[in-house]
Amino acid sequence: MSVEPTYLETRSSPDSSQYFWAYRVIIENQGRETVQLLSRHWMITNARGELTEVKGSGVVGEQPVIKPGESFEYTSGTPLNTPSGMMGGAYQLESESGERFDIEIPTFSLDRPNQAALLN
Image (cartoon, rainbow, N blue to C red; front, side, top):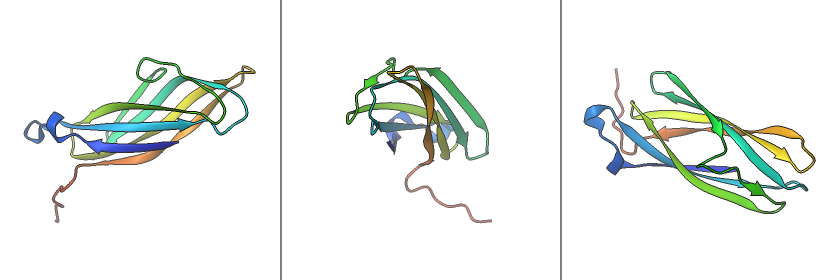
């Protein structure tokens, strides 16, 4: 699995403390069984350490079925009220044999490009 975040300057309004990122996810089935993505659980943390949890069925309105050797790709987005943060979590999947399991979404940074560092 890979995740690629992109800061969307056109959807952001720093003067109003609104920052928006898109992220592209590619989920590859490297196993021997067809699997279906049932749900997602994201943990999004802003620069002040405030945590927002997002849980729900599927991703982008779908519960994709991924055959061995195939992948599923989607793009979604998240707002923050700080110019940086991080997110990670897990997907729950189910195999053809009915086994449910979680795969971890490694934590990745949401950083606004060219953000001036503040030194104390």
